View 1 (tube, rainbow, N blue to C red):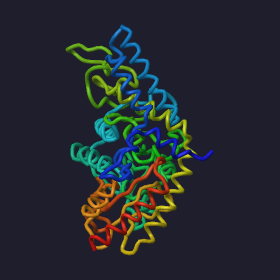
View 2: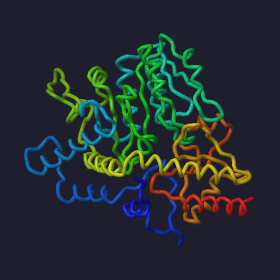
View 3: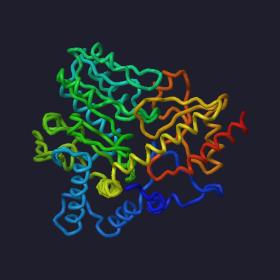
View 4: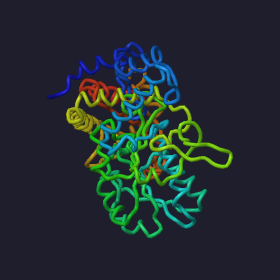
Length: 406
């Protein structure tokens, strides 16, 4: 059954507003998505009725909040098809998740001269933590290149993987090019050589089905605010065998079992990696967001967004003087482009006055910009609540912008 977009848009209060007297067109979903009423109500209800620290109290409010928190963990487990809730760690977001793995994995397994493999299209969050770890451990960072279509050159993988490779980290879907990488194939090839793989799912989890067991990744990370949940919360999925072996990233609070001055033993999974008072409100809000997405149907979401991708591609390719970056055969609804002789910031400001929200700049992927010899792009990123009419208005707005600034 096709999505009822008008009904869905009614679920998102922020979409009803006008900006500078014009209906809001929100094409900045790659940065953050809006929240449906059910998520807003859930977070508000928690603050109004159940506010209490989880796991540490015997009273009613603490019990109720703890129950909701662990229910959210199960919602995440079901959404990505993890084997157990022990494999679901709540974090501050994608960046926090990757930093946790980079630190813990580096402390346990990386020695001087070892190698870490990433790709040329990584977000800085899946690049800088590995650089920091390599500097700390005197290891080497190696990079899988991409071609000018924005697709990884996987023919280079066999040469890049060596006996010194300790882990491979790859983005599932590029936040600046829209490319969906063949992560299952990459994981298969890495595992054939006993190399674990971390997948950055921040830009994929809101667009399509994620099945970590079918994918067979060792780690998968994403942020709540990218999938219609609250900011400041996210997920680290890890296979239980890895999480059992890795040392914790931070100490204190819920991650302890017994503490003495002579030493500390750590709590069981998943609490071993959840030090301190976690953002339990954000985690519960994420659970509500995932349940909302599941109620719509992942297949229906993909069908609608595929239609928007075709429509947007046709519109952009029909505008003279527009250069589109990222033409992968398998992609999400993210479009990065430049208008001839017009600075992206100037175009973004004009579009804003038309009520159109886009992102301009490097999108935290400076190596991608270096690959194409540019300093930044305009990025339009769409999700299921966006419409055909918005795409048409956006194309008209781009043509008017070019007329004004050319």
